[in-house]
Image (cartoon, rainbow over all chains, first blue to last red):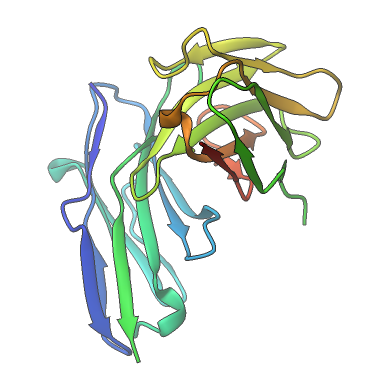
Length: 115
Length: 114
């Protein structure tokens, strides 16, 4: 069965600290896609990144980086030099290569960046 | 930049009433979805829609729910007889292709059932 686990319910850091958000997934499919979405206090869901199961290269985009490891079924997200504007709930999500591409979300991690 | 829009942003209704939540997906997208998020909880899949029919629905999507694409632009979610537990944020999403492409989400409609 598909499942996404975000064990950290809440993280609080001080501005400029680095922070890593953990995501562990379960799937029986060999083809699948992993995503991170950001939900700021305003409530919308903002797409951050997609990785597919064939590509284990880590990715960096500005202060954001993602570490995908199939061996541990993890897709962790690191924010370097955090800023107050990074405060949000971050969701990891999984989509299998099936007929509908539905997203299975984790429970989210609330990140609070203090000034 | 194209975006998914949803109306209304907030809907308040009495238990037992019918509500229709509206979405305008991104214009060249072919795959449409509804998700819901009960306050403080995770986002849950409700239904996916492709080629004018439901392609998958979750256990939440019972007979009280229906979806429709009445014209080339709108995608609606109807709840026939609302219950208190239907109170949630409802998100519409669309995607241009299966699998590889990310789903773009609308800003959500907050439904409050009294």
